[in-house]
Length: 369
Image 1 (cartoon, rainbow, N blue to C red):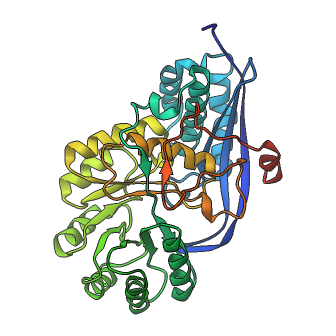
Image 2 (tube, helix red, strand yellow):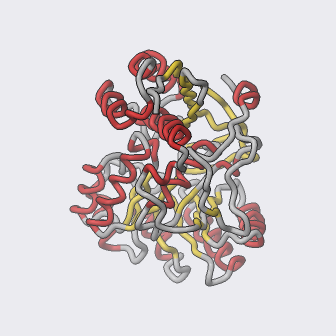
């Protein structure tokens, strides 16, 4: 293959509205404020990447991600060969501290580009598909439990059988009532879990878990602050519901520390926390070695660009015991012509090169900030 070189790297800030406000501990989300990275080669091929701003999770603001790409990463990449992705990303990873969201969007775009140039789906570049389909979970975070129940029943009719309940936003008695009402509405065979988003205290968690101990929750995600390792370990020893680390997990070192402390039974892996797709694959191997379950997820409000990337990751994971979460369906619009979406609750293996999406650049322009 003739050497193909990168002509341009563009960092695009977008704000895409959600269907309705998503409420979780410490934040109410009405718009997805994301970074889109567009990498174009001299031959006109374009790769796309995405990362959500997440100041309470990664520390990344939308403006800081745009600045990192424009001022640091783009000058490093222009004129280089995208098929040297691993070498390029090694330079990107070491160019600045942290900035995991910006690094994630860059690597995603490079993977999309390399897949197109080589004529293979991204999952083949990540090691090959281990499964033929994915069954994503659905997040519930409405203002009122009645809306959660109505939404869940609608998704159940569409084949979704895995739900995550956002807690830590209402008094604990109401959180218990909400969980019990959802279990009653959905039945005993549907998988339920809960996500505290660092919004509960130890006493609240104990009360919540006592109130729902007979509801069969698969796991409780990040109830305490991300830096409270000892608190999470104490809770893990006292609760019957397994704990999942999310905001506390952003590197292999974090995974090992949580495991060594006995603080979690599993972890939530996000590309924006680890700085790309390949670091998440590495983290998943580590989780396997440590015997930790994995929940693979987008942040709330990422478009089908990120959803496609996480779908490819889901296909190569050896362990998806705690499910996969895509979040593009919470948006009132998307940036691709055919959004990533389950059919009868199932997402099938894509066969097209790269991420397998067709970005609508007119929509990207429409939602530019």
